[in-house]
Length: 79
Image (tube, rainbow, N blue to C red; front, side, top):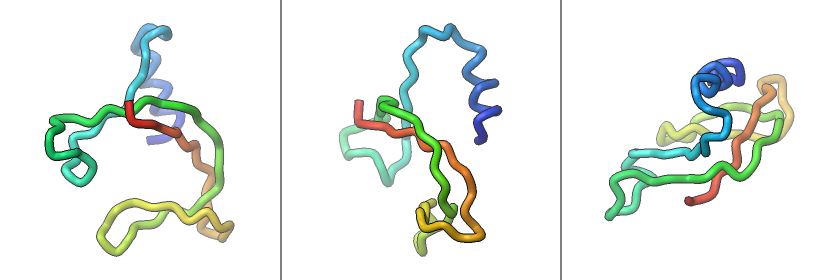
């Protein structure tokens, strides 16, 4: 998702509504959880290379290379 797509999605809602990030991913959930909730702490712009680890999980390489792209990171903490 890019910034424009995110803004389009968020514009549908009251600007005062709190935003959280959730997941139902088995690799992130604790055994007793049905869903895991995170709060957004901050956002910032960075430059990194989008990659995938050997097991298929997405990852970032922060070293500057010809494959680096501008990214907006959303910092989260467990809610």
